Image (cartoon, rainbow, N blue to C red; front, top):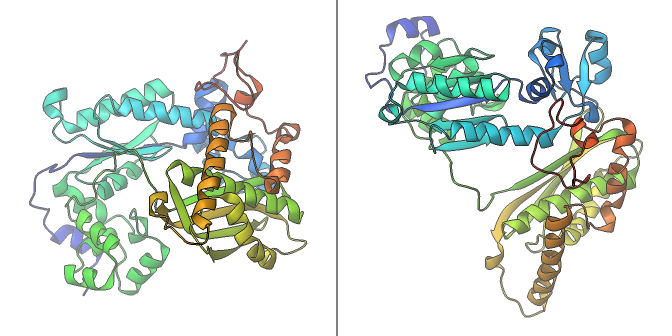
Length: 449
């Protein structure tokens, strides 16, 4: 059963782990307020000011630390933001530039180690185990050099955590934000866990933390010192792995391989302004399905189940899961299958702001079974047709060809600029670029005269 001792008594009474400082040296690096920082980096006049991205969505998607100090939080509406902070600078999200800077971020880290897991657009894990002799310095110094290069070359700060495994490294990167570098040696893990709420452990969600609270497990240290047999009996495998990492072991390996398949594929799209037009909302959903199916075909996969949701302006969502009669990555077939469910959950008069689709139970196209009724032949013909469409999209842009069911969504996108939500990158094209096709170059202040 869990220990009844207080976190403070545990921290003082439990001896440190009797293992080396760094049996493995795992570094987690996290960009500080990444999207807003990208905007401040390319326009120095924004430095030190409350910058918010998400104008095109009508809510705060990312915010600078200056905006956080003013009491602004993610998801806050633009109207609320203006009340709280009239001087806030609200900008449309420029994901094109953010993704390019993200790639530069990874490239800088790979100067020091090839073992890098691109965990998100603004964070990564890096394994620097055994590189002290190569770089002729300690692990702490290597981590410091990586952080220095990122801060100086990208023009904004990163926070990093160095530890024996991924879970503890993730704790370290959050310890001193912004611009912190926290080194947690294996023998000192317990000193950090005693100050961390169990709900703040990476990988432990709201329901699991509520369950642990019921058993008087309130801190990460409480959880780390819970009896191993109890953890294995009452929690799922991922939480047992977290428990082991909190005790200094290294179970979670870095995923450094390029993806060749997916267990599931999701596409979500928020549109502005919100709409009560049924045909428009349906078109937005159809557009998401097309995008998700396109990605599935790229990896030669087909879903057997499809889930989708509609989100209202009040952030309430309604969703449905639909089991397909056969696995397919052809969007017109998926759209036809989910249409009855869409008719059931759509509410007239409700303002909708987003739709999303989730393809699950993915199988490879090679697993498609032969049949006696011509379905396989039809699938081969459709595969050839969509293959030709995908080639056209690769060459001329992904929105070059699309189904008529998503026409209203594509037509609305053509007028986005009229609402003043175009990013600076789209407003200032380089020679030879078009609205659909651009070079992989971020637009910085003064790049275009």
